[in-house]
Amino acid sequence: MTTYDFTLKFAVPDDLGMEALEFRLFEAGCDDALIGVGLKGRLALEFSREAVSAQEAITSAMADVKRAIPEARLIEVGPDLVGVTDIAELLDFTRQNMRKLLQTHLATFPLPLHEGRASLWHLAEVLDWFQTHQRRKIDDALHEVAQASMQANVARESRRVPAEHIRHFDDALVS
Image (tube, rainbow, N blue to C red; front, side, top):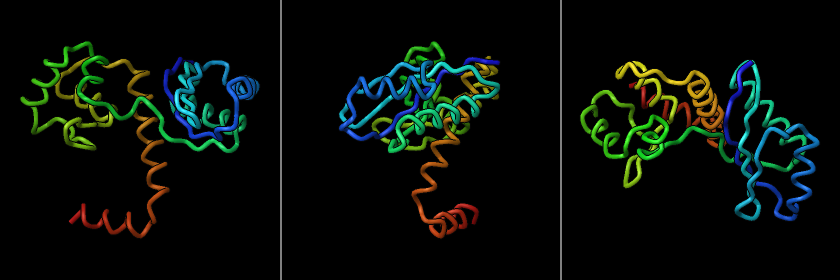
């Protein structure tokens, strides 16, 4: 078994107190998570969970949270979306070195999910690029969690868009 580190963020009823949240989560099996409640009605859990795969670790944690707080709605699974600073920190670069690397490899570096003042990429795609193009050794557990996080977030988003809209855009992207 491998230990996987990841974050789950949820929208929860804002009438639940911290003690009630902690008790419910502990009883449901989330004793391997640090609990954060910065904003009212929001819950962030930083898990360090042992499992045979990252997907199993993440899905079992989501099931535990839903068992503890049935009204909880998933906002995001991480690590997934990253900016230049995040990438630099994860791979032990300076931000300036990361920006220079981006500028010199525009043709091959993954396209950002959002481009602007602060561009965002899927971490899994960035890690794939570093393994392939820079021959950099990437931690297997981090890589696996990044892939599972991206898949969970994409699946969550795709449920929010009507299927006919997805097909229409899929057709446009292929042509």
